[in-house]
Image (cartoon, rainbow, N blue to C red):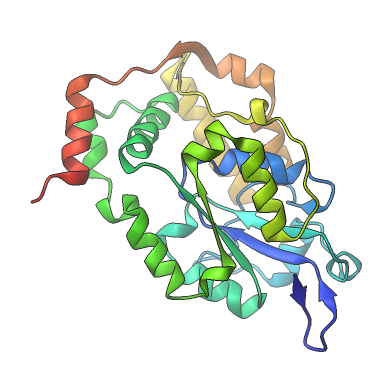
Length: 264
């Protein structure tokens, strides 16, 4: 629960720090469908990124939050990005602009997440080999313990909620209930089946790359509603992606394992 300077109850504000491929879409889907939560027009605004020059008024408008909503109890609003964890100055920015912000960290086995990231790149039309993909990665971004230590050095542990990916996969409702308690909102029965990011091959790598570029343009122009509508449009997804799962070879899995765990 959040309070203003004179002790009045206010809506809970939260920031999902990522990382990607660890359940952010699941949780975004749950919170977007919760009657007591406002997520705005799109999952990721990058408002708390150090390079974002937008105002707090812009952020509130995007989230469709007004003074009346903020003065209510048992409601919440916030932002989730799979990139915030890469620059934790976002936490300091949130603390400055909206004190008492709470933080959600998504935790997944490092190797599983690395392989999932590689599959996602393939899904979006990338032609990179595993060695080329790994050359662009930073090992520190897959160090769950180190990331949590850095976050807890910035805010008290009671303001951090950790979501283990395996629990979200195996017992989603239990995770939703604990998250609702953390955010001080009502528990809600929710089926996240429509929000899975399946690792399927694109029907055309060129078309998938084009779609990714168009998404970047829509985001940069501020057409958030159009972008989110396109991302959730099933006919568009069927046009872009087939049903064949992306399979990673044993050799590439070994390379990914060595990247994470082999000492230099």
